[in-house]
Image (tube, rainbow, N blue to C red; front, side):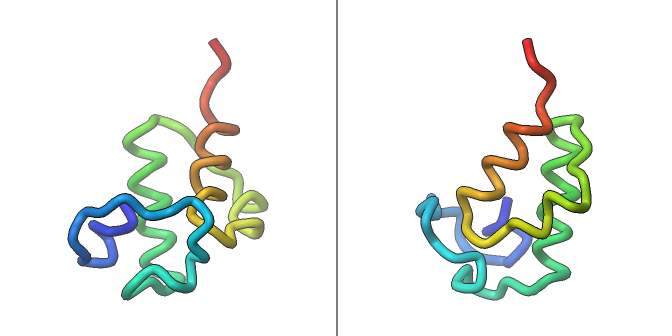
Length: 70
């Protein structure tokens, strides 16, 4: 999703990659990616969770935290 929003070829981004190093990333594109992920997974990510986004793996973590428990 980050690659799509940042208009980059779809590649696997390493989990430890700092978000600041994702090509063409900025705060608006990051929020766009989060909104698309919320829509795709039918979840709502709390605004306070966005404050801890530093690396790609942090996005995976906040999505996992927002998913309903089965």
